[in-house]
Image: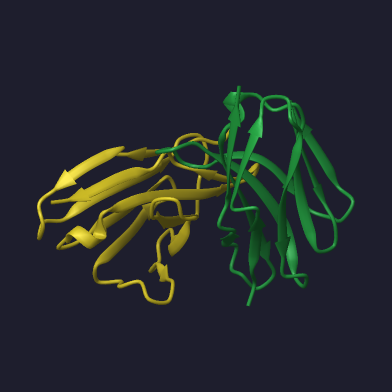
Length: 111
Length: 113
């Protein structure tokens, strides 16, 4: 069964304190790995899609990387406005084009 | 970029009534849309895949007679929660696959009283 697992469940950072969020996935059949940001009471906002091991993408203070078994979302010098839940999702072969979501990491950045 | 519009954003209904939620792709055609349910502090759980012009595919454990899905055009899918009960109270989110990736609506907070 295709699975996506995120860690940690929650993360508290001081403003400026860089860190990484982890997303591990079922190794076989990954077609794409997606990262989203979700604010309370809102739908997920697209951040990145990664397709192959070694791929990296950046946007402002965020950088997403992909290896053969996991993905990382690196947050450099975070600000309080980066506080949100970060979701990763996998698209797998034979999955009928549906995303499988991890449980998310709730990030709180304090001034 | 691709935009998905979802309405209403909030709805309160009485137990036993039905509620319809709309999901529209504004600037692209979506042959497939997805409906999710999200409980507080939990991730998105896929309820069903909505296919234009055909029956929706429901995930295991989702009652198809309770959650009616209609995808009559390439830009509109609707989810109707029939005979709603307090346990149906949740955050419902739709999504569509665009060329740029999967785009999500802003969600609907349903409260059944």
